[in-house]
Amino acid sequence: MIENIIGKGTWIDKVANTLIMREKKLNRNIDLIKVESGLGASGIPHIGSMGDAVRAYGISLALQNLGYNSELIAYSDDMDGLRKIPSGFPPWLKDHIAKPVSHIPDPFGECHNSYGSHMSSLLLDGLDRVDIKYRFKSATEVYKSGILIDAIDQILTKSEYLGQKISEFVGQNKFLNVLPYFPVCKNCGKLYVAHAYKYLTKNKKILYECSGIKIGNKEIIGCGYKGEANIGKAEGKLAWKVEFAARWKIFDIRFEAYGKDIMDSVKINDWICEEILNFPHPLHIKYEMFLDKRGKKISKSAGNVLTPQMWMKYGTPQSLLLLLFKRITGTRHVGIDDVPSLMDEYDFYEDLYFGKLKETNQSKMIKLRGIYEYVNHLNPPKSNSNHIPYRLLVQQTSLFEGKDQIEKVYERLQKYRLISEKSNDIIEKIHLAFNWSKDILSNEYSHYISLDIEQKKALRELVTTLRSYLIRENNNLANDIQTLIYETSKKYGIEPKNFFRLLYQILINSDRGPKLGNYLVDLGIARTCEIIEKYL
Image 1 (tube, rainbow, N blue to C red):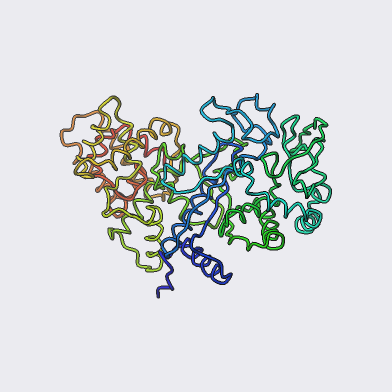
Image 2: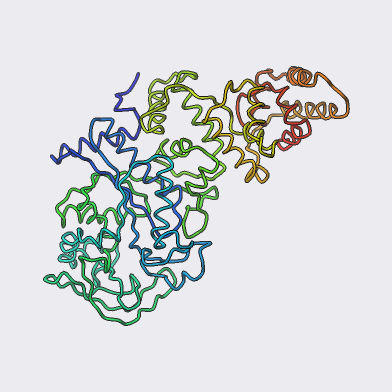
């Protein structure tokens, strides 16, 4: 039985529908529904950072599919202070610790006007390369424009009450003694070190003293300067515990997802929206963090960053969007070694979409088709493309060098009857596979395959016989190898189709591929035996 289908039948559609029902219940104007993603600007943006923006864009797309105008606001927190030097960054940045990242020189030359601008541009480049549509907002420019002044005023006017509530919510007593606003010290240029102790309501100014702060395990000494900051200019910023609420109201944000690491901040900001700013807080969904293969949180400062640019050196934009759109719940362990499987998985989704493969569970089929459409921005191709296992492309590209690499790989693919003519799609995949074979193949670990006793015996005998072919001439080698594989499987009681599938899995990590006799001759018997022996 097929469940009630909303939109394209995915989690994205369910969230969009929940949002619409909530907005109608609140009786708010829904001529334009804005969703938001916050972009960090303190380090190299990674897959997790991009995932936040891509998923918000997915909700915006689903809203449009349901008949509503929607746009994504990409908000860069480039007023944030630099807390520590990310791994691999120049050591001179130590002199800029605690300064707003938009006030720090570009650490990678003069291609951007600041550290924050350079970091923001990397994530925006990633979004552009996967064709995500967004409206960019810089925190520095937003504060400079003065559009936050009324929201800041409302928050600071009730700062004592807020301090008590923050203490109740999360046990943080910091804002019982200082205002939830960080001035930029006019003497030393640092954020966080200047403690705001009084708000002058009439003048819309903060009085502060630069007395220092502890960031992590390091004491940042204040310069002792006493001054004032105008809240209508970029002379400081709201603390995270209250800033989200201000920008949600100013930009009329109706949806924003969040990671569990800022759950407390979201909880407080939701309350501020409702109680202080008289604005219904956005609908939220919580997502789990991306972890590396060791189970460590992917972090800008730790140096285990997997960036969108790194992924797209080896994989297509569609493979990256599939990774981010497939699901939102559950912790994700992700690494660059996931590229081959995601490349092949996208082809699987496409084969399902165009009916080349079947899925008997109709509800599941609808969801898979829906994800495929979101990966293609709800404008899927008109027909199926040529699908070649990524590992096969990698192996083929590793065999050739020189200017005619592409042409030689094409000839092989035509020989295996995997393609009939050249296409931009195939050219792109061959280039990506070249990058993988050049950078990663030689250091790559084999994928895991469980072998039973009879399979191991059959593979050992196959390798032994194949090696004997190296020392004698054979004008019919491809056919002999094809026959050898068949006879070896029968000898050890293995269904021939299952033995052929096992060899495809070992050689190219796929259930199917070109005719094995021809392929093993082209790959080389010595290389073939070497690969099989890794699994023995």
